[in-house]
Amino acid sequence: IMENVIEVKNLTKEYKNLKAIDNLSFEVKSGEILGLLGPNGSGKTTTINSVLSLIKADGQIKIFGKEMSPDAYDIKRKIGVVFQEIAVFSELTVYENIDYFCSLYIADKNKRKEYVNDAIKLVGLENYKKFYPKQLSGGLLRRLNIACGISHKPELIFLDEPTVAVDPQSRNNILEGIKKLRDDGASIVYTTHYMEEVVDADYVYVMDKGHVVMQGTPREIFSQVGTLKEHRLDVPQITLLADLLRQSGLDIPLGV
Ligand code: ADP
Ligand code: MG
Image (cartoon, helix red, strand yellow):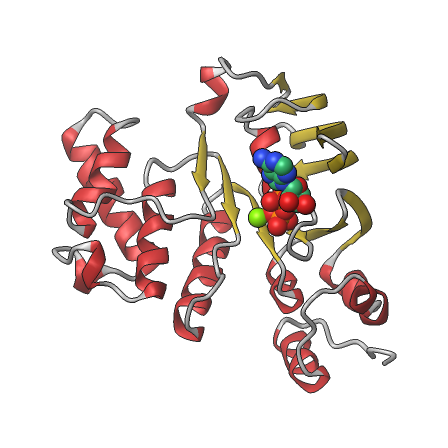
């Protein structure tokens, strides 16, 4: 088994006078959840788009040990992507939407049926299979968007701000789903600007202005809450944070 599924070195992306990504380097280890934590505009989406070769950036990107490029289809078919913007067909039901995206990868009907149902179960949409997107709440719609991106059981999954503007129940469902995908063997990269969500990651890179400003385990990141505030990250009430830490077995003094 390969240790690093992603290796990014010296990634830079400039838009006119703005460096959206500024000499960024990071690694994702096989079977781990990597959290990219950063305020809006820190370069999270640009990083994902560059790593996927959707946009051209300077630097080196290796996925599964191979150079990533726009036509690296052998790499791409082992990847699942859940974009920040919801992208589903309004004409198709929940089941049909997931089945459509799954069919791009899985030709065998029986296997696909199994995969689609696994995805529905993972995001908890069992009771909504025949619903159309417009009949779903924001949180359920985001869960559908996730199911569409992961139903083909990819080895590597990217989720860009999967919990933005969802109700607490959907948020928990999504974060639990991410952990289940990891426990089933996938490697995962997800972005967030909510500091408390890094509890669910195995390793965290904190980004600001296209740089990595801090990296470490959630425990190491949380021990520097004061520093994180300087980077305009959403910091919940300290008591809530302490509760989250305790639930996660990360009971540490916060020093704030
Ligand atoms: P995040 O996902 O962390 O919110 P983004 O990666 O979307 O951040 O954006 C990083 C920076 O790059 C922001 O300042 C944003 O305005 C800028 N940016 C992103 N895409 C473009 C683009 N196509 N043209 C010009 N500037 C862009
Ligand atoms: Mg973004």
